[in-house]
Amino acid sequence: VTNAAAAKDCTSQFCQKQLSDACLVEYKVNNGTPTTITMVLVCEGSRWVGIGFSESGKMMNSDAVLGIPGTAPEKYRLGGYDQSAVVAMERQRQTLIDASVNYYDADDVTVLKFTKIMKEDGEVEIKPGKNTFLYAKGIFEDLNYHQERDLFELNIPKVDTAAEVAPAAEESSEKKRKDRDKVKKDDDSAEDPSAENQPKESKRKQGRGDGKQTLAEQFASLGPIQLRPLKDLRPNLSPPVPVDDEFPYPYPKIRFTEWASLSHQTREIMKENFGYNKGNWNALGLNDNERMTCSQLTDAQRQAIQLLGWNCDVWDCFINHYKSYNAEQLGDKKLLGHVDVVRSAWVKLWADLSEDELQSATRLCFTEFVWDVGYLGAS
Image (cartoon, rainbow, N blue to C red; front, side, top):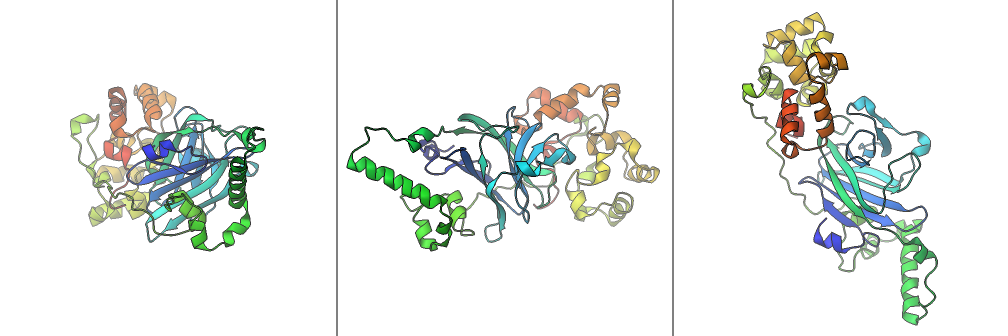
């Protein structure tokens, strides 16, 4: 959190945290019973975005709010790393307030906004003090592999609801009474639906005293307006070619070549035998066949990868990363320990991996590009 944000109490106004060069979050804890938190996630590009709530700091067994442009944001359970394990919660648990997700073309950003009850039965609780959150943004608008994800911490303030309900008896001076009346009036205005009918200029004045508004305040009251620029430091998305001896098998350079740069013959082979197209080739792991081991492929598919110079070891390591192996198969290849290490480290960025984690990730044929980016070509 920036110094300016740290100085706020994050209850009377929004606090802000820059998550990356392309994403930031703003949040505010709201007085009331039950206590709620309003969060706004802003990320570059038109894509799905989400905020997760974690007790362990890991994606597994966490809760999340996911925003997919064109649909209403919902709460999800994250039961595992595969897309099939990311499941929307039951209808009675969809308790978000004023939830929305929108793409703003003029600014090229997707904005997820919601208010959530901080303590709900059977869900990860957001408590006063330090809390671990997750965030992610996808490659496309549809829910699929995430292009960027990470952990972040927020220091959530404690709301003294009793003080709101029963002010101390000694606060009897005229000035203090007027101050309380003003606070109450501001709170009532914030909850009054008729406030939506106020002119835009008057809403702008409801922001901070210096006339500047946070992103959350802007989007809560004004909708699409000019945002402050987000620093555009997107990486060069052409993956470097690793040295072969880093891996147990030869590096399949063709698989990490952008679709448009493949030869016509290669595109036809992959299209005919695997159903590849530009979208599910450039987005690594999106084609259903990549979720299969080589032994689960058809004879024609195995012959096709041989034409590219690959064998089953190359497919299972670089394409599937042994995700579809069962425990017995992993044990036979002495990979169980490596898989456990990679699963635990999956929420980290490559640069943050320990030596042991890097060794395990490399043994499963991950590269920094596949781990952190996972998309070929311009984003």
